[in-house]
Image (cartoon, rainbow, N blue to C red; front, side, top):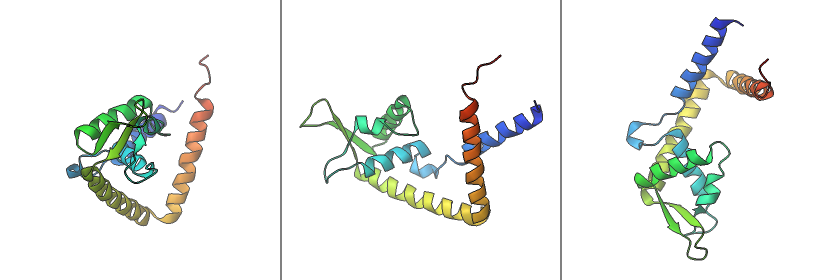
Length: 150
C-alpha cells in the first residue's frame, strides 16, 4: 500500500466535502437542509398540501436519523411547519413557511450561480471527466466495501 497516496486521497476527499457543503452564512442553511427543502417543495401534490414526514424521510442521499435531525433544525429556524394531517392523524404534513420559501429561492440562486461558475472555471471537459472519475471511484468503493478482511 502506498501510504502517501492513501493520505493524499483522504485529504482531497475531506477538502472537497468541506468546500462543497457551504452556503452563505446569512442563509443559515447547510447543503443537506437545502436538499430537504428542495424535496419538500417538489413533493407538494396540491396547493396547500405538503409532503408527509414519512415521504421526506425516504430521501435517497440521507439516513432517516439525518433527515429527522435536519427537519428539527429547519423547524427551529422557522423554514418548515409540521402538522398532523386532518384526514389521516397518523400522518405528519411538512410544508415550507414563507421564510422557508424565501431562503430556498435564495439558496437555489446561489447554488445555480456557484455551479455555473465552477463549471466555467474548471471547464466543461474537465467537469465531464471528473464526473466519470467520481462514478468510477464510487463503483470501485461499492465493489470492495463488503470484501472480508483476511
